[in-house]
Image (cartoon, rainbow, N blue to C red; front, side, top):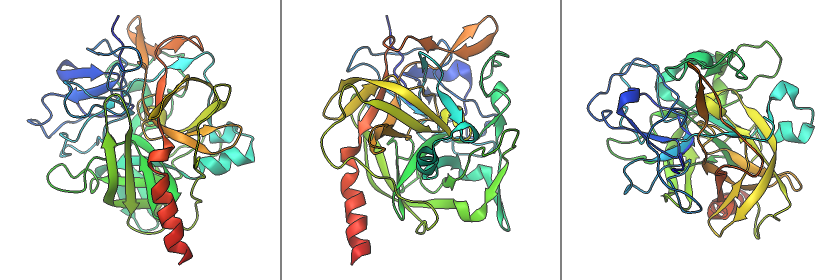
Length: 370
């Protein structure tokens, strides 16, 4: 049985032209067609080709290392409502899934003040073409989630009345440095410079029930100026360390695990932008596997979650970066529903160990101290 190990990302493509690998979609015609008129959330939701099984199978939420036919990532590939967006950016779509109960919460449903503080350091990666700054407001072009996949979501699907805009997630580790998945931002050079085509947005979240979210303060929008370090292995680590255009003063860098590993009995939590939606907090995940380069866990994540911080609930420290996982959606008749698995069933979601990015946080702290 094939395992659709896919990165969790968003992208523009014709469904007939998509190849999936663990939810990561590669648009085979994108390099020829640079004008697409719709955003499609390629969350390994549809019955498309996928490959890989077990610990080493698939490209995961963050895509492959360039040698695989298809890449998969839990990000919604850098896409745009613009009809002139460079669609040949690495399009890693990962499909995520619900394990046990659906634990995703909007911020207005989160009662734990500490968790709200952690969420405050989360960022949405949004195509620059979809962010229009006018005075003190940055207006965000988004797509109705209910119709974001070509096929409609079923009426019972949660959050279907919300809007989707982010193609990946990330988090702050130093005043001017964020971390995301390697398949989310790959380069700051040449024709595939997706760094310059991405805006880093704090506060893409719903703080009150019934809120709409089409703009954030301009002060919450940052630009990517440099990729400090990046790795993207189909069966291993997948991360990018990004320097921002200026220091962040109103959000705190997150605390990272400095050494060691979580216990198999630890509960994990993820905060990010599943399916490109406003910030969601999802706890209740169990650790399934611990390797030197990644952790596997039963996290409720989707395309768009690629790059999300994964926390140890016991310590509130970041354990890693969500990068790849199980298929997100399946058909129920003519509409789509979230794929649901038992807490110990299906593939599980892969989390790059945070140890790969800890040195950059330490360097920034030392520079600030001097």
